[in-house]
Image 1 (cartoon, rainbow over the protein chains, first blue to last red):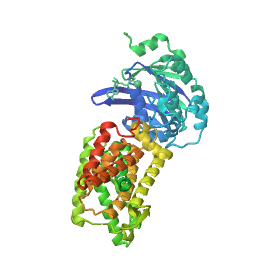
Image 2 (image 1 turned 30 degrees about the horizontal axis):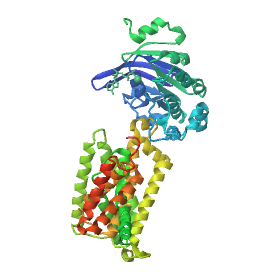
Image 3 (image 1 turned 120 degrees about the horizontal axis):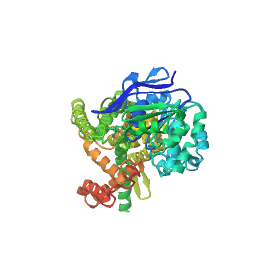
Image 4 (image 1 turned 30 degrees about the vertical axis):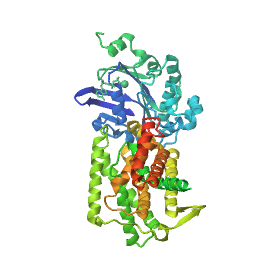
Length: 235
Length: 287
Ligand SMILES: Nc1ncnc2c1ncn2[C@@H]1O[C@H](COP(=O)(O)OP(=O)(O)O)[C@@H](O)[C@H]1O
Ligand SMILES: [Mg+2]
């Protein structure tokens, strides 16, 4: 039984339909990558799961509940935390205050705390009193990931954590994932940049124009199949 | 010596204006809501204190203490039932709604209390003063000023030292991302307006004991409050206190030169500060 599942998830912005019946699942302890070109609907999918966009209740199932129509704050309390696209640190808050916002509502004891987040990203401890937005892009991404971990979530959603970061920085950020995974969290990483995501994922979904065009284990998918699913067969 | 006295009286008067302004500043800082009924809510609180002094036979300070939770509930309910529904990217609906509320409050108070001006009796405190050298300062103005400083300190502590204050600032930055942290923006806004009404009640205590008020007194207080908030830099609490003091000093100095210039001098100070620092004295770094 999957921990998190979307069933025929559709989403629209006014007249524009962004998702057309997306079926996807995430098992307990699993790491799944969702890849797709810009505009494929990845962020819409993440926002629909996290409650920032509210859909029909039965479109998202989590831990035996229908959460498709729940509010974002209740979904976070239930154990789904998000690292939003663009990092979204609170500019008026220091690094440490940003981290503490992560457990503002959901105060579940577990592997993650200020100490363990600082152990995962030591640079954040050095800069804990700086305004979050004074940090470099990579460090801000670490704050955003750490902030989501602070609630000891069962599911961690990461939307394009490599966006706008240099390759060496992306490697540093992704270096945290083996530990995050070992802590027991189930993870969905959304990426346009296929490389890093494929390395840490147990399974991959490829999206194009609001639909899942391919899914499977990274090792089982040929480059060609991924290319076609990502860009379309005629590209 | 007369000028020292004038400036000191102005500083103390500024404490009253700061109290008018701090609630406005708090609400604006957190939810970008300009509450045009703020002055009328101060007058409402003044009538509540007045009623409590006679009804329960309390002194003004005890009556204000009883009024605090009542006004918190008024603010909380107002935010929940009315203001949360009109907050959004468009700033016009909340302006219209609070303007309407201002009119409703004034009319309701006229209906309930007539247009006669009233005053909250403060007994011997009304005329008590402490001599400091050749200058004598009123006890009520001193208490007002001390309260303004205490309220600023308390709000500052709340904002920067508590989990609730952290959530206030986060929600003010970005309500959607705050909701990803488990914050309910509507609930946060209701608490903020409740707290603003606590400040309003403290302002009402001093407004009502130091001067006469009637149901239409609100809008004039609102203008001083606005000026203090804007001079201080929108959303900055210490800035608001400083803004109140600047208006107060300008008014007493103006009045000293020519009694007819009191109000005008305050407005001129406001314009002068804006000319020199268009974003106020202590603008927030992020807006
Ligand atoms: N707020 C919005 N209003 C209208 N259309 C939107 C909005 N957000 C996204 N879209 C559209 O929905 C589609 C999917 O967007 P998105 O989910 O952000 O894709 P991705 O994250 O894969 O780049 C795109 O065509 C985009 O233009
Ligand atoms: Mg996206």
